[in-house]
Image (tube, rainbow, N blue to C red; front, top):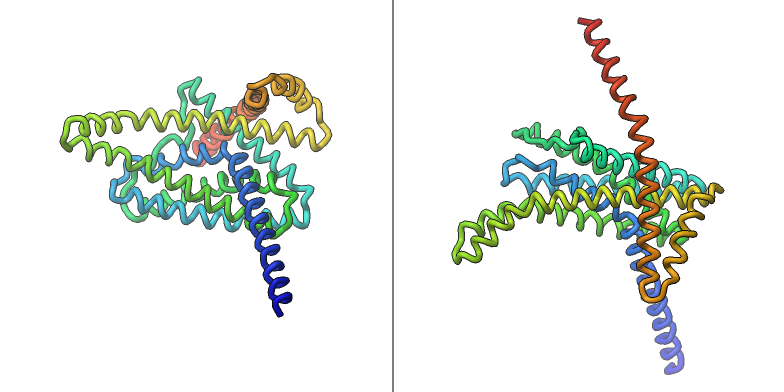
Length: 319
């Protein structure tokens, strides 16, 4: 009996160690996948506060909560579709990732063009309408935009853990989706309420608290601008890296081989090698993403103008 109990306890210990190792592996894989999706995450964090700019402060957090719940629904749908694709047609993963990379490069390059030219895209105008119907429309628009960003996040994450078993992939994607949603919309909620916190503190004593509150209010536009700028660079970096690696996997090895020729010697420098190699690799991916995105913007903008001109001509003809 004692021997049987000892054997049972030993089996339980083995299972516990295996479970702990599996949990560690899932946590590590989820961490890698989340970092790989950083470009879209930062951009998502930068974009979302625009939806509640000009809204009654009492409605800011409820609106963000509704958008966050919509984002979770988006990710749930995307996870199911992505898992089915990865299980039954895994060869589609790289082309889908590359399509996402093209989208990221286009979005990043368009943001660069807006900064250089002084123009603003359609999503730069904040929604300031009031009333329940306008609020519902605002939330629907935000959730629709989030669907695109969430798809990019989850597909990038899936590409990072494609070699894992189906069950592990599902758990990892669920963890990534939940963590990123909580992180993004938690930070967004904090950002949009910082003005209110600063205004509250600016009316309090002592003088040091008032000064801190005033500086907080003054600093928030700069904080949002920094987040937006970092998001722009991150989108170009992640998009460029996805395209370089995808092209390498599909047989067009020259571009990524050139990056490795530049990054590997830097990585071999004693002491600072790993950091320097990562910086060179990142800079090359960012520049490649900017180049590809610039081509896409150069093609898309004239096409948009022609489409707009055709619509105006049609309207005048009808009238």
